[in-house]
Length: 210
Image (cartoon, rainbow, N blue to C red; front, side):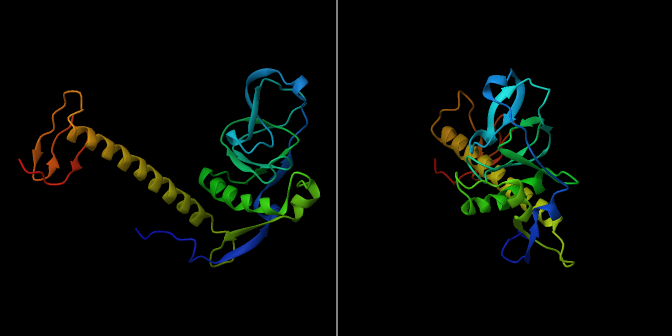
């Protein structure tokens, strides 16, 4: 399969309102009024996916699910994908696609983060500014956002990261085998291959002399 690249794509600017079917700011909820619970409360932090607390409030709050959150103040521009129900503070705006898709949301989040340079703690993204804000996206032959490319590109990055982790632990395991630190599991060597290791891994190693 040919590796996807951002460099060979054509890009175009779109207003947020052209991309998201719903753009809505959260609602103010003071610390004093927050009740301890299990629902994530998303605020303008750049850490922990924006989660500031876990609450149980149901009245006079705005709940969202499976969308992006954009910090309007504080860590302005910080954008996260929230794959669960949460309560949004008045310091973040929920950005919702008509057809929610985890991979497309992750691609969009990375692009939206670029607007950080335009804002600061003293210059927030108010409701008026967010309507004028734009995002640059890859397009298809019709000049529309190439949703399939965005999804496939993030899936490709995901697989690359998974393979990195697999390779890392395979190498760690191989090191343990070579140093006889496998807890009694003895590899069977033939033609540079570990033929059997609890019937799980098949690893290639360098040829070793007796």
